[in-house]
Length: 103
Image (tube, rainbow, N blue to C red; front, top):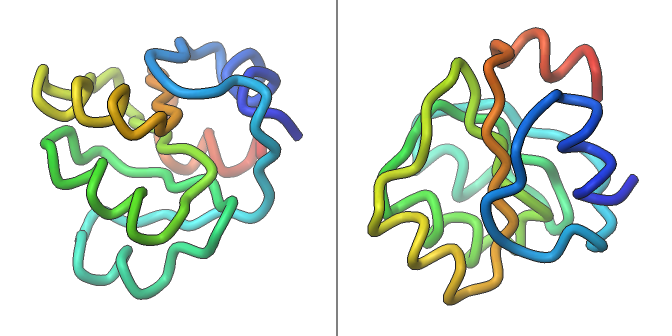
């Protein structure tokens, strides 16, 4: 599925990145050190983390996109870094559980 399709399914907003990127698989987690070892290339990473480190983890793991749940939004530094690195970031009001069910 494409990132833009995922944003639509989640009723979310694509804040940065390429909406045409294909994503597959999913990892749910907020502990950044664990996400670094578990997120696979092209995965959707579901989290509530909003700081600049999410962009670093997504870049390191080649995550397909970051989905920030529960109505949280990335802080300004995180969004700027994600845009610089062309990392797709989606925000949604849905919980991690609801988002994962839809995926």
